[in-house]
Length: 220
Image (cartoon, rainbow, N blue to C red; front, side, top):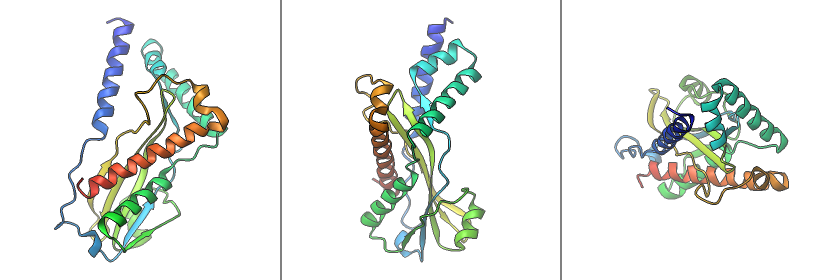
């Protein structure tokens, strides 16, 4: 197989994985969990995802032509540099708040407490030690970064019943990339004005993720 063919195959596999990432989960059954009847729902987010992902066609092709570890290190350094230079913040807290607001509005919930401080990890025992009883809605970033010079974001959400450590529902939103099908964009355009466009697209992608997760919870 030629290098060009290998690159095309790699790109096809990445596109397939991206398409599968946001597959529709089963909605919560009313008799399994009546959120409005829970004594308390604790809405939490976890420590920010430290790595800022940089994906591009260029890196994908380079991974075919060059040793993969070298390409990975280059992409990681690229992401770290962007995060540091433009003081980028993982939008997980924003995503959580939008998800909570959507559920409160759609399901008429009055029993949700949004916790402002992030938890260090998402182990269920950690949740039980922190809250003891009720249901926890916890969210964590799966990936945040850029995809061909567009902001991208994906997150996982769960509903955990603490009494018996049962995960009642869990889903990961698709990897949202605003205007992914638009015209080719340069890195300079993305980070102009102290990364204004990049920061805006990260927020937009996080909002879209929250909306998708909320729709899945209520069965839309």
